[in-house]
Length: 418
Image 1 (cartoon, rainbow, N blue to C red):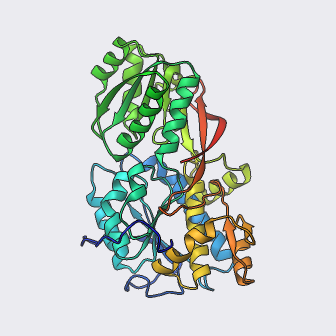
Image 2 (cartoon, rainbow, N blue to C red):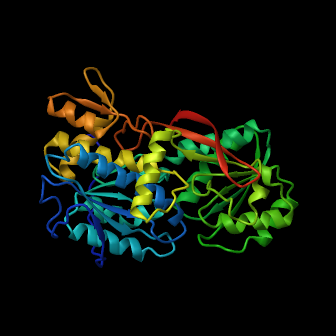
Image 3 (tube, rainbow, N blue to C red):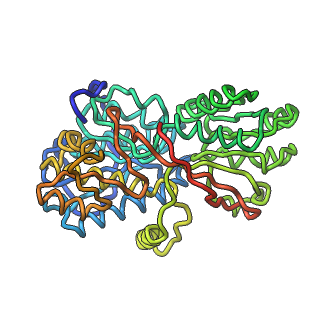
C-alpha cells in the first residue's frame, strides 16, 4: 500500500508460542521476513470454536492456491510454505494470541486470517506491528477499515457496509415492514446489525433489536418475545448460535420462511432436526458463485488432505484462494518475499489500469511479471481491487434460499460497492 495510507503502525505485544503443522518445505524460526526469497504464510483460521464450520472451505482454498503457485514455479523461484494454526473464536482469545506469537517468532511473511473480525482485532496490532502482512478472507467488520495497522492489513471479503445493505434490501423487497434483528453482541454482530438497521429504518421499516452474548445457547424467551411482537421477518446475525436460535423460533411458532441469515450462519442445515423448518428462508454470503470446475478442484484437494472427506460448503473458499495468490504475486512483483515487499505491491497488482495485463491465475501473473509487464489480478471471488485501506472496493453478495431439506441454494448474485 502507498505512503498515502491513513493508517499508522501500532506496536505489537508479546504472546505465548503455539505449535504448528506445516505443508510444504519446512523452515527454521528466524526474524520476520529474513528469508526474503521464500514466501512463508501462516494460516490463523478456526480449527475450533463457533466458526470451525468455515475452516474446511478456507483450508481447501488456501491449500489449493499453494499447490497452483508451486506447480507454476513458486515465488521468486522457491516453493511457498504454509503453516496451519488455530484462531479459535471470540470466547477464547488466548488461542489466537498463542498462534500469533508463534507466527511472528517463526519469521512468517504473511498471515492468512483471522476468520472472525473480533479475533483479528485481538491479534492485528502484534502482526502488523511486526511488519507482517495480514490478509483475511472473511473479516467484515466496518471498524477494520480505519484500523491503525501501518498499511499491512487487507481483506478479500467486503465490509458489512455492503452485506448489511443487501440483506436489508432483500427483506424490504420481500415486503417486510416490521423486522426483528437477533444479533451477537460482538464485533461482527454489532457492525452488521448497525448497517442493516440503518438501511431498514431509512426505508420506513420498524426495527426491534434483540442482542445476545457470543456462545449463547438459550433463546426460548427471546423467541417468545419475537413471536409476541408480530414481526414479519427476523434477521439473525450470528455464528454457530443459530443452531440454538432456530429451534427456539420454531417451537415459539415463528414461520421459518420469514427467517433471514447472513454469512456467519448461511450454511447447510440438512442434518439438523429442524431442517424442513427453514424452507423459504434466505441468507447472504459475500462472493460470486464459484465455477463448477473450481469447486471440483476444491473438493478433490480437501479429500486428499482429509482421507477422502467430502467438502460440502464453499463459503470463503474463493476468498482464501485469491488471498494467497495476491500475497504470492505481490512478493513476486516486489522481488522480496517479505511483509514490506508484499505491502509495497499488493494494492498495485489488484488494480485495473491502462497498460496492465489482466490475469486470473498465479501462473499467468508470473509469466506477465517475468516479461516485465504490470498486472491486475482478478480472482474467483471477484475483481478484489484494494483501496487505500486494504478493503475491496467492489464485491458480489450471493442471495441463497433454503429448500425443504435445509439446503441453501443460490438464487441470485448482487454486485455492489462497499
